[in-house]
Amino acid sequence: MTETNQQIHKGLDGVYVDTTAVSKVMPETNSLTYRGYPVQELCENCSFEEVAYLLWNGELPSRKQLAAFQKAERAERKLSPRLLRVIKEFPKKAHPMDTIRTAVSFMGLEDADTADNSEAANRRKALRLLAKIPTAVAANFRMRSGKRPIAPRADLSFSENFFRMCFGKVPAKEVVKAFDVSLILYAEHSFNASTFTSRVIASTLADIHGATVGGIAALKGPLHGGANEAVMHMLKEIGTPARAKGWIDGKLEHRALVMGFGHRVYKWGDSRVPTMTKYMNAMADFTGGHKWVEIANVLAGEMMAKKNIHPNLDFPAGPAYYMMGFPIDFFTPIFVMSRTTGWSAHVIEQHNANKLIRPLSVYTGSAERRVPAMKARG
Ligand code: COA
Image (cartoon, rainbow, N blue to C red; front, side, top):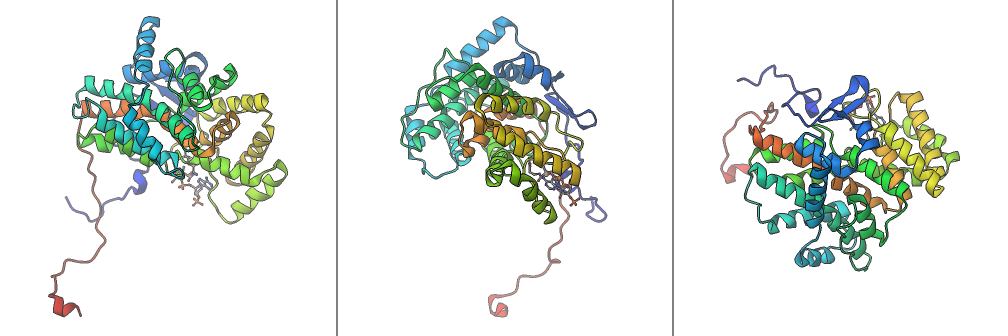
């Protein structure tokens, strides 16, 4: 194989690298299916736990299967006392994406199945990651401000339990539903950057904890999951609806990137935005946070009119989480709590039909030369 005349696909833009049966993104119709089911229908009819089961098993659970799945997940929620001590020692100013990345890495040290990459072991580990990540996120949330962590409860749903571990109580059902919907929408999105990262790591036959740590590291970036935090920082900087138009016009004049807009695959709108916008609006009604929606509407209108660029999921998710009461730097860790389902489904798929992912590059450095002796280097 020669390097000359090779076409470079910068950012792997438009490149198909493998098959997947987990989800399908259809930009032509602004739609997304998980295992064949439209994500909007899943949001309106299912819990996040049912969707996690679907992603891992290919089918929605029966009542009995769901009960068994919930029981197994709830039984794995507790962290070891050692991991809790580690979380307590984290620097208070550390970003929660870095602390959850470290906590997941530590979970790999403690997991009895770490060295076993069989599908059965991967499923056990995926379930433990799903169950324990929220406990670690909530423990960090509380302990960084000197509060005691709240132990998980086995009689609460995934979302209810997370709220309780953070705030000590379960909020109104409208808030829990909006949060659950956000988790469903964030759960899976084919070969996005963090999932591809996880698949690359899994393709070396490394373990699922390593692949998840890599996924978290990739998700942190503001061009990917970190955008939900960046959106809220932007809305807060703008401050009032009256300032929104001037602010965005100024940014566009300078060709600045506006966070929460644009997508590599969706060029005519993100399939997940209408559903999340509905629940963001519900949060504004519930909390009286209408000003965030008003600012967001001005930005979205200007982005369409001036650039023809649509918002992505992070645009409504950021303000929704803010109105639910989460600090901004916990928005992307919440994304992790959900996307761990998608990452795990892809790691299992990769391990089941593996080929090492190892692309090529065209070399543009110095021509070959001889190493000069030290005295000739001056
Ligand atoms: N704000 C302003 N302009 C944007 C933009 C944004 N958020 N997103 C894309 N554009 C512009 C680009 O500047 C480019 O303009 P040009 O052709 O005049 O240079 C054009 O739209 C095409 O964008 P491009 O950078 O080629 O798209 P991409 O597929 O490489 O990038 C993203 C996709 C998501 C990385 C990009 O849209 C982005 O950075 N968005 C903001 C971060 C974000 O919200 N990320 C979450 C994604 S779910």
